[in-house]
Image (cartoon, rainbow, N blue to C red):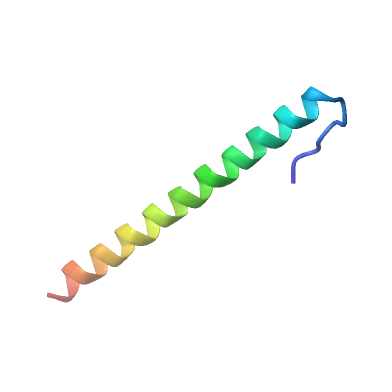
Amino acid sequence: MQKVIPTGKGQIAETKSAIKRGIEADSFAWLKDDCKDLVLLLTKR
């Protein structure tokens, strides 16, 4: 977890960037899973 320094606007910026990073990480995980599924499908044939 990232430390959030409670200093008005700074805290909001920190939180927003943390959320953005979380979303990016999630979508990358999704992509990896999709690729794995595709590879499995192709190798089964």
